[in-house]
Length: 194
Length: 265
Image 1 (tube, rainbow over the protein chains, first blue to last red):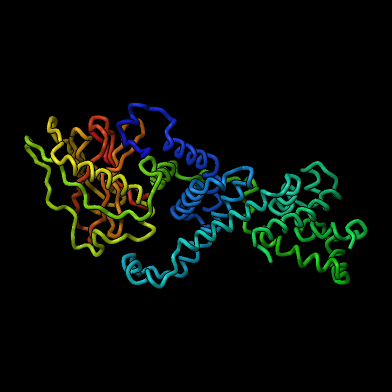
Image 2: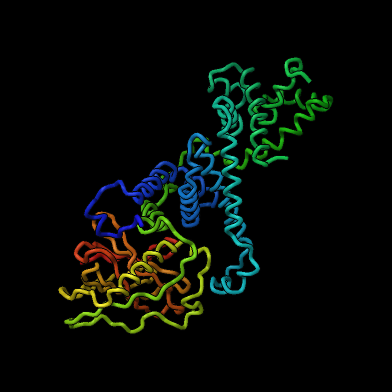
């Protein structure tokens, strides 16, 4: 319907087509996150460039096809992307262990199709997981999120975090406690903890 | 228990996150042994800390990566292909392969387009059988384009304009052992295209794209690689693009691997 193939597009030459908007969205994702994601995934995979590229592409494509994950009001985009990439890394490592090399694709397709669970279902769940996690982080106040990022993800001590955030150490302590409580409520709402 | 009156409560946060100094952590640990209220609090919050690990720390740290840890510059092109851009955005997932449209007839050609029924019917997968779900999802957009073309060509079977001759161009990808040539010529609906390709790994599903100078890309045909590596396949196709504006052809697998790029002369 909105597709018009080459002719109309060359004559109009405009960048306002929905297809162009889609492409720009993907381009923006690629430009902003591709480098950091690739470096991270490559190290996790001990330098397997092809597998790393595959995972980074898949991660960016999932973000592209889940625009709701990219709404900055709903969470940290970066957190979402890295969580998805991490899941894919774990999947690919499992797949390598589980799958004997010598069995050809063709046979896998024919004989195993019935016995192997649909991989899409798994992927969907994992995407949701990652999305919920990023949302939960994103639902925190900026104060709570930043204190968790400093202490947990960046490994800062209370004193170091106090310096970075410009608040007294006592405030860092109480904020981490309340941040964890707030996160617990957020997880509970999403069914991630009992 | 009242938050304000229990002095240990707020140390529990940094304790769980590993942010306390060693002596403070030790004091907290001893206190935990004797305080049921703090034990209960600890039990509630420990799983939360565990879930934080779902997001890798790299999401929040500014890691420095060496030059050889940077992605390949051509990755964007492959990502774009894999996304089906610009030929696919809405993709019904249940589209199936349609027989490729036949080549339009030319009235004057010295070399008529060879229409030896090119694709190999011995393939295990029948033409009307659904594809593997993953593959189907990936290339369904492509198939919509192919199907649309099929309808168009089918309603106007002799619409090919024979004004210009056939161009033949070829290329080799030495690294992957893939080689092939493309023949194409203008018609009044776009360009008739036929590719002959050799050395594609069996099991690959392929897409032929035509690209113009403005970065517009259209699908010219899709097919399954022959079941033997040594076999060559000739696949007819077509594209809604003027022959004169085609800058190159590209053969890509449905998982985004670029097999061959054939520049137009």
